[in-house]
Figure 1: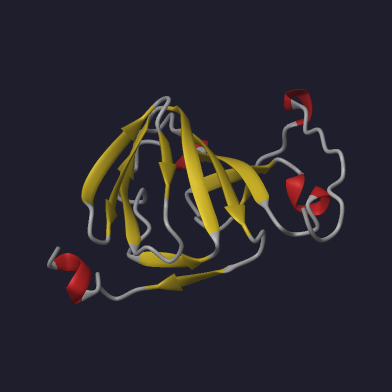
Figure 2 (figure 1 turned 180 degrees about the vertical axis):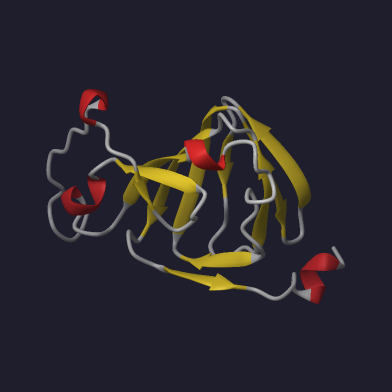
Length: 141
């Protein structure tokens, strides 16, 4: 283990606060590990905002990629569909765990109104880049 020592962190459900984040139709509950890991990781629970429920035209992100070293998510409730560079379309449901390799181009296509996802990524702060299309080499696979 290298770098600064990680700190103890506990984020209790009874104190949960959801805030607007990267996607306007979603809300995010920060689980408090960014500070405890000195920016190495971030974890949050993501869900659809109540006022966005039923409007599935909003439930897409457009092609993009995250400039991060690690990103995984675990579906806590509901379902969510993505298309991935070189891997096509996939729908994930409750109990599914997905590792998105660094920089993979993807697009959220749709999700259920009751979707809840636990997402963990590193570093805590990283760039998200809009992509015009899936790279040709990946699309040909």
